[in-house]
Image (cartoon, rainbow, N blue to C red):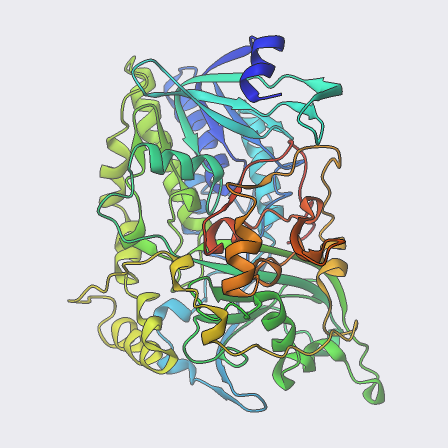
Length: 565
């Protein structure tokens, strides 16, 4: 049955009315809701706010490095320490290391640009910070609906955003309602704030519908693949922050890695690959696994039995796309009836590899604009006060300083390192020039015939791992009997174009083993989609060279259930 047929037979959907509906229970969405309730309490008014979260709980789908700049959090809750916010491990030391295959060079700290200096920041589990924010929101009277995925934007007759509808539950793989069928519900609002994270499924639709990216540079992304390990206390340095560049990436590919020492003998480590890479044989997941074999990294993880140092234990795995275009790729982030906040718009500062402070700040700015509008009796118009406040904010100044950071990497690692050093260290971000991009990430992929295959070593199951064992520890699960949420515009394209011309990059850029080319009985090829494995990273939606894969939201509650990530 089509969506329209289901509505005709089982509808109409139940509707609930709110002043503000927030889509996404991450730092940006929760900050929006919290700020609305704070303003209402201060001024003795009542504003009804609901937050929809597609994960099983707030924080379940949150993945970040994460070093957190507490600036925005301090504006939201000046007493966050007294409230018990889980920012427990301050940064104690920074290291920027350039790697060769066996060699390494540490940049002296006195020449590190400000963007790589993290004193005053905290190494956190952003998932735990998000859970804490959700508790603060609920204490203020915010309604949070976990396990409810916003699947559809609703519009008024004049084209303005009316709200959202949650997805239907209990639709079988064949598209027919099962015995567990439950019709989605509508949530109507005076204003709807979208805070879905990078490459938000509804945010992408809104950007296209309202042409919000007109005159902007195309957005560019990276994929971050991450693990959490528990290591021997003798190798643990609480608060130590290490960033690396160079090996195993070639100098033409944007990327880098991190290893952060958290509290309780835990380290979080990860690898970021720019999704504007050109070689279809490249695998971000395998690049990360190979990076762990460098002597500077494996030293922390392997242990040394002869010295009584126990090997580390891998506790968690996950992956997520991050926005990297910065200020020049920001779409217009207001439209009639709503707004985009956080990574849904692309507010991440890629030079600092930080987005949570930007998400919280933009959530607060959107909330202040929405509160003034609601209390003035307005609805469904453009919250122009939000972009105006952003233009005046410290966040705009911060993003402006870093506006060229990612673009320099198209000229190679050496030039990028030199020029970003000049911009950030010498000029202190007062840069008289601007570099623009003219192509989206998927357009950079070259035909396989023009590229060399990359020989990745097999995983050893101790230091390096395969995709399936990794997905297993991400606690990812989807209701099996549901339509695949990884949809194809044209089923002929994966084999006819992607496999034939690009050697099937889907099987390599996906960090969860969702896409697999298998043989039919007649020896022809077909693309198998293992949707259950999906960790909701959105890489496929971004990097598919044909833009044939469209990520849509699955049933609410599905996906990863990250712990300590």
